[in-house]
Amino acid sequence: MTGQADIAAYDNEGKLALVVEVKNKVGTDSEWAARMRRNILTHGLLPSVRFFLLALPDRFYLWKDKLLQHIEKPSYEINPAPFLKSYLEKVSVNPENLSNEGFQLLIISWLKLLQTRELPETLRQDSEWLVGSGLFDVIRNGRIISPAIL
Image 1 (cartoon, one colour):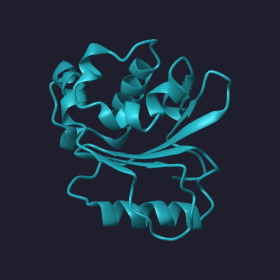
Image 2 (cartoon, one colour):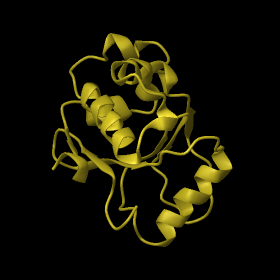
Image 3 (cartoon, one colour):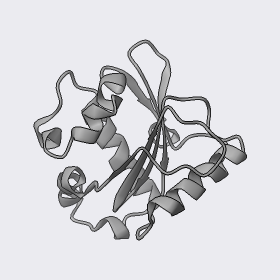
């Protein structure tokens, strides 16, 4: 992050609920993600927020209610392939071939889908993390902000 979030999601009361850092990098693990998050925290680039998502093409790392400065593994580690597949098929591209900006727009589209009143059919499978973490309820009916969509 360069001083601002790649993507920020606000709840329906206008409170910052989720900060997303988007990286078009594959082949990471939870230890790499924990170090990346710690670096972001160390440089003061992560505000106090309930959820932090590090979104990569082959892995999502989600932290919930944790803003400690030390290396801490994510609360959830998710394979995003099942729910990003339809977006990638629409543009006929492999995630590894997307630019960072293109991948960011894909994540914004996915987050906007989460703002609906009910969990979309395309997300019902493999969505235990989304509902169980509380993320779906927090950002539903909220708003998404990103320099990419301003």
